[in-house]
Length: 65
Image (cartoon, rainbow, N blue to C red; front, side, top):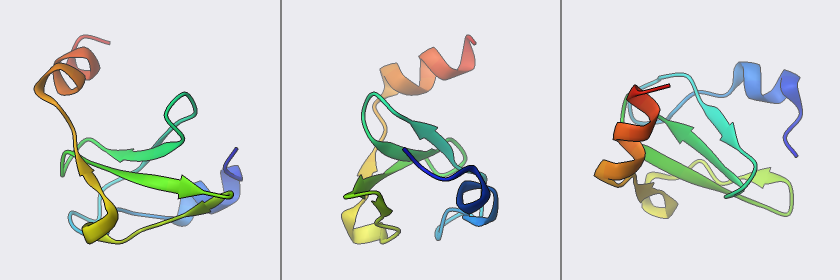
């Protein structure tokens, strides 16, 4: 779980976009950049080199919300 106050001040290091916490995958997702950042032991790893690119399917699912 990510603290809501922490989440409100964190931004994507690539796009400076807002982050969305995905509890099921334990990741912080930036829809602007299309990247997901892992959360390890409750600590967000906000390094581009540690991120993963979102799949086209994930992006489509988000658009249809």
